[in-house]
Structure formats: C-alpha cells, structure tokens
Image 1 (cartoon, one colour):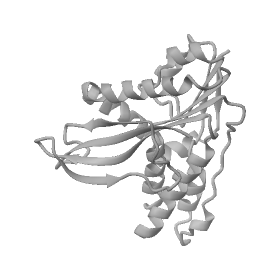
Image 2 (spheres, rainbow, N blue to C red):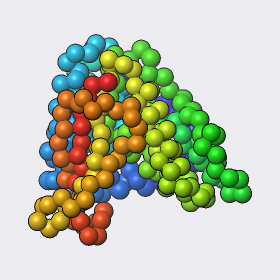
Image 3 (tube, rainbow, N blue to C red):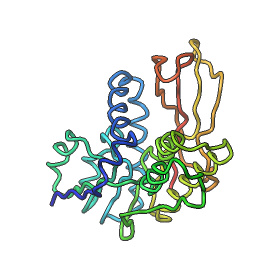
Length: 257
C-alpha cells in the first residue's frame, strides 16, 4: 500500500536551498536531455545488474529525486517493497508512483547533517567547531535486502557547505574535513554486501574541442573503494551554463559496497 512519511522539517530544508536545487536539476535535464540519456541509462543498468545478487524483499533508493535514473517499473516488479528516500518528492513523482502499490515514499535528510548545520548557522556569533557536527538520522536501513545510493554521495555536502559558509568563516582545510565527514558517514550508513553506490567522482572541464583542460576530484572520503565495477562519463553541461568558460562533464562510477 502506498505511504508517505514526512520528517516535518520542510521549512528548514526550503530555507537551505534543497527544493530550489531539486527544481534546478529538472530544468537542466530539460536543456541537456540528449546528453544526459547515456548517463541515466547506465545508472539504471548498474542498479538492475547489482540487484541480481540481492534478496527480493525490501529495496531502498537513496536520492530518488525525479526518478530519471531509477528503473522504477523493473524494481517494483523485482522487489516486494520499494522505498524511495529523498528530501522531497515532487508532485509529479507522487502521481507517477501511485500506480505501484508496493512503492513507499520517505521524505528525509539523507545526509543526517542538515538540521545540525542549520542550527549552527543560526548562531552567527559563535565560532564554528567541527566537533559539534553530529549526524541525526530519522530513518533506519536495517532489514533492507538492497540499498542504492543513487548519484547522491557527491551532492550531500554541496548545499550543506554553501549554507554553512554564509554565516561561518571556514578554512579550506576545515571545509575538506566537513565534506569528508559527510561523505564518510553516508558510506558508513550503507549496509555491507547489500548496497550499490553510484556517484560522480571527478569533474572535467571541457573546451570547445571536447578536450579535458582541468580535472577536479569530487570525493573527500577514503571510504570509497577504488575497486568499482563500472565507470562512464556524464556530459552534465554542454551549454556553458554551469561554468561560463568550459563545458562540464563528470566521471561516474558504480560499485557494490
């Protein structure tokens, strides 16, 4: 039976920019639909391939978003229950999954750090102390036969750091530590031998001749194994809108955890 669980922190998440970011993803997809298609299909195939060796009871998708990269029809047929986790489920997605009676929607902060960072940012007079950053999860992944981290690892720290830096002075060293903390906690959250992680790992700046002129690592944690099963290039932006000087592509990996 269809269900919808809500954390009650929608106003906080909205202030932090999560909902605007989610809308921006769809707007960019509309502009880049042809360039995004291989990446979306590769993600779907990686999920289905990983699911072949997992139990058939409960599946969790972390970062389900617009379901652009989630093979929801196939997964609904393979698993008894499919749980979709995200900060917010767009109205269009609510309507789309209503036909699948074994799909559940959960609205939650997947990172576990949003409320903590929001509260820290409200006290503009206090100094930032990294030791005060403790994750707070209001969901439990125990009992799931498979968990998919779906193109979310590299995204978790971006909005949080942007919001934190609005009110706190954060050195580059501390910023790297915070990003590492967020990414490491996410990987630690994933059940061992039951999880599939798909993530951007490197940002590529591409010139007009499609040559790589700059590379930037997007991974701060050392918990992500280099022994990944697949990798591909996601042509994220070919309109010079993300970076005015270059097109932006990402290297993406898929790995069983």
